[in-house]
Length: 617
Image (cartoon, rainbow, N blue to C red; front, side, top):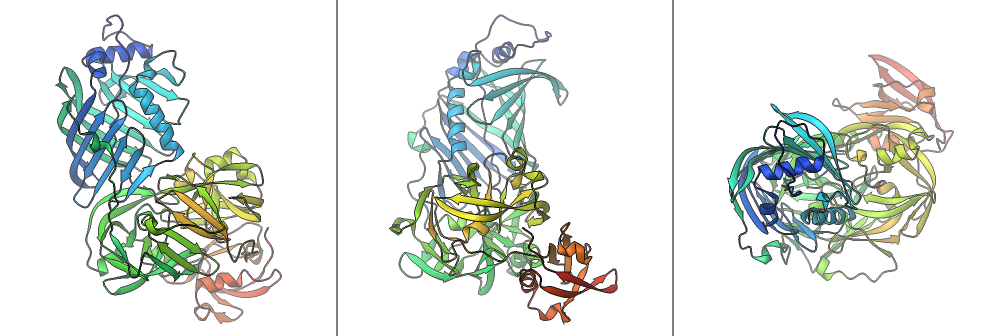
């Protein structure tokens, strides 16, 4: 799931004022409107003269009350602190790079291309390049008049040719105060409504900001209590912490090596012990925060606080914050962590697996992690003690939204950055990329994929080849979402790189240096079994095996399966004697031509269907 968004306040500093205009005039020149705005709020010269600023305020976010503080030094140094009852979150920029300290104190230096582009744009904004009608970077346009509350407002759009970020500002016709701003990113929009305007050192400043982040619908309110201009600020305030917290310990030395893991349904599972309860947890680099199942948390007597929204695979999800007690896994002891509670056990149970938690980015980012898919072993190394000397390919993979991004080419044509996610069973294209390149109409097998946000429609197609880190793999299956929304609706990058491709390798995840290392694994180039039925089955709430989908034109459709059929037996053996759903799915990966007699229950009536497996690609 995606990390929650925290408030960032953007100050628009724009052009010098031309001749005086009356508030009643209908203006269409965006530069005149900006000029009148600055004339109304104290004059552009006063804003240009502000070299430093600091504010503090009360924040209401995630269903909790807290404090937000921000310091700025012209042109591009900043620091923001968010303090809530359950955690603190800090972001900053020292003028050379941006950085983040997450809710568990882990530092991340932002090196990804998107962040670098945003910093470049913000530096130009701070130098007022967007106020120049002849700017080589910015395009400023008038978009008409729209209401904000009871006020009609001029709407100005600011685009640039460096990043995909678009800004819209709304100036009240009555007094030219800025009533609203919208920052439009490829995957979300941040709408901020301003009010409670007050004079500070001759400048009119809004002291109340009501923010909504779309499409997830996350809301937050900031009420400024202190605003200071041109104060002395210690330069060290903008620097990141020198060291990360040591909130874990290896039982022996500086590593925990060759820890066995389960590989079920193309996902990695580890045994984790909390309060003497050893249970199965999923390892998922795509989860921004470690998650514990809500029911399991209640069983342990844990209490949640606050609530926020995040992106699941299919749509937005609601989650609560929680302190996860100290836990252990083979060779490692962890202190208590700030995480999230979410009813995930039912989601995994539908796939036939008992799971009570997800170890996400905030767990993995402490280590260099080595995953040997073929041998089902995982190793964790302290980053300061890790020195790679093997034969693999070291790839720079800057983190963006906590994902490593790797270059991969499909069929020698479709190249770009893929988000590596060991919590994704298969690889798949983002919807905008798939639509742009005509993959929505490509021949493939239709079905459903699931995640924390529910199920969504996909099409799985065979592609002749992929090339990842100079390693070529023939005939790989990649999915295309057939509907927009969720994390697969991102317009930046090509898609998600999941375990269906990664399992060919020994994979190293080095968060400290933002690198990924690939070695040929024991299963490199292996022709893995594929489903040959076109039948999708899940375990329902009554613990029956229920048909979830029937892919058109496949053996399942030819056999007469229908949605919601209950599978009761295969070749005369009751399904409860077949070792669970995963074992049933393996039966449907047998050789083409294999025949099964399958008993089903449909609307209370017992039926027998004959299924013959076929190669589907």
